[in-house]
Image (cartoon, rainbow, N blue to C red):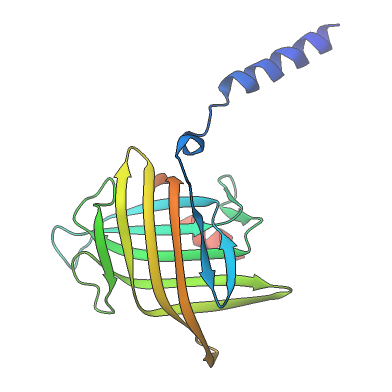
Length: 189
């Protein structure tokens, strides 16, 4: 009887600690991108703050990671991810992204992004694409809710004939974190 009572108490505590996902209350959510005739879902947005840039006063480095699946925060591994999109953004605010349009700039000037890439899993192959130009539109940001749209000219570095336009949107919750240096070391293993 004691075990049943403890199990019931544990379930009750877990249920009480679960909150509604605020993104569930956002009307007409769109979280996907299209590329080469296929639409790919984006379930999660994580923004890492790398703090102020040393090479450009008043600009902050925010990295945007959009993907399907989720991030295991104990191992920093992407779980169930078959689509992934990344932007390295320079912005004038440190604790969130300032609404506006950020354009691709290989020299990474103020309020631009200098790196954007994606990987897509197709069967047993993972195909990597890099941006050669494009834009990221931050339509709005409000207390962890993001409204983003983007259009990128992508190319496969291993096959110059494999190109296309990647277009998408993300409307919903995003997790804002201070940079965790072990993320990519662990995720790449």
